[in-house]
Length: 283
Image (cartoon, rainbow, N blue to C red; front, side):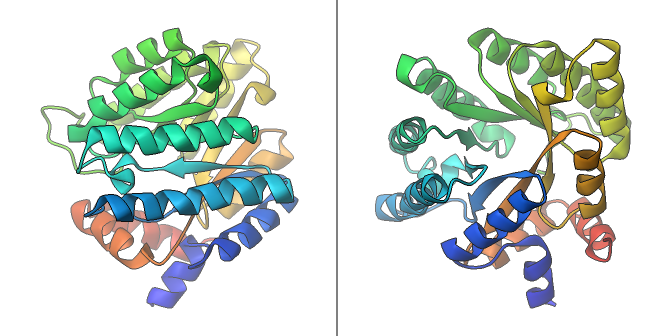
C-alpha cells in the first residue's frame, strides 16, 4: 500500500526521479514546482543538506530547460533552530533562483510560523536583485489572510493561494468549509485583479469555476494566472484545464522523507485521509 501511495502522489526518492517526472509533465503542457519532502530538522548541518538538494534542482532545471521552479518549507531550512539560519538559507536559494532565471516559492506551514515566514519573504523580496524571484503561499482558512494578501500585493509579491491543510484552532481559522470556500473565492478575486502573476492552488471544481467566471467578467486573460494542483490528484481536471487554454502547474513532491511526511499530514488532519482516498482511484 505504501508503494502504491508513493507511486501515485510522490515522484520518487531521488532528484533524478523528480526531474524525469517533471519532464513528462512538461510534455503534457503543464509547468511544475518541485518539493523535496521533509520538515523540521534537528541541526544546522541537516538544514544545509536539505538546501543543497534545491541548489542541485535549480542547476538541473536550467541545464535541462525545464518549465519548473522550486517550493521550500522554512522548517526544513532550520526555522525551528533559528529564524536567522532559515532566512540565510532562503536568501542563498533565492539568489541562485534569480541567477538562473528561476523562482523560489516559500511554502506556508502551520499558523505559529505564519508571521516569521511572511517576514522572511518580505525582507528578501525587498532586495532589488531578488524582486520577483521569491514568492509565498497564503492559506484561505486563516482569518488574517486577507490583510496578508493586501500587504503582499502592495509589496509586489507573487502568491499561491490554497485552502490550508493543517489542523488549526477556531481562534485563528474558519472552522466551516463553507466559510473557507467563501474566503477562498474572495481572496482569489483580489489576486486575479492584481497585475502580478499568481497561482490558485485547488482541486475544487467550484473554486475553479468561480475563478474562471471572475476572470471572464473582468477581462482577465488565462495567461495572467495559473491553476496549481498536486501530482497524482485530479489528473483529468489538469488535462481539461490545459485543453481549455489555462496555465496549470503541478506540485511534485519527492524524496526519502515521503512516508513520515504523509503520516504527519494524515494524522494531524483526518480530512486529508479522505481527500487522498477519493483521489487514489481517479484517472
